[in-house]
Length: 227
Image (cartoon, rainbow, N blue to C red; front, top):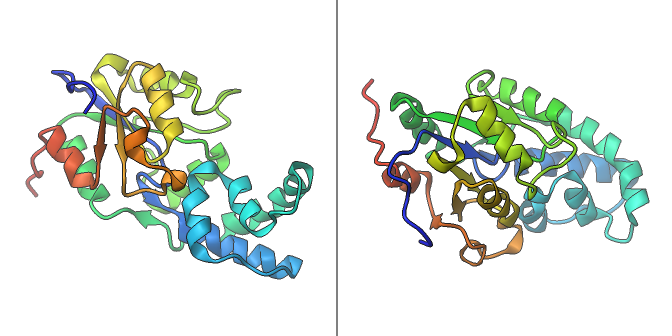
């Protein structure tokens, strides 16, 4: 742990894919469908899962490594169409996330989402999994002209949720989450249960690294909410 947790925490901001939701199975299913249409060999699941936090282009690159950026851009719209068809079918919160969010809400804290995912996909996915309107703020990858690791989306989420960055956590599974959160003045939490982009979360300079959502509840001293 690099620094002590602030005495008072008012809210928690999360990355979406790889932090709150295990969305890799749907993204991989869409890639398999895309490969079938293009008649190219599909990549194995493991390397695709690892890069999910980097977005759709990184997922496509697993199957089309020889393509340049312009060629990948040409393939992207169809891939997103295929993903939107299956989005939410296999996506689910990571083990312990539902309980964590219930505790956060039950203790009067606010929570929000800052993701690099396109807004039309973010909003639809949250509806499909039953989280529509639940977060105090949702900032997507195209809400602003910049995205993580720029701190601006994190600052905007704090503003929309009515949170002071000095009393807010940012939680993510990618180095860019830590960089964005730290630059915005939040206490940063790297999580090892996510996709990690092949990296070591202990090397990202986060204030703390946690292995399970229950560890975050423990850090915040959030007891289970009575039924």
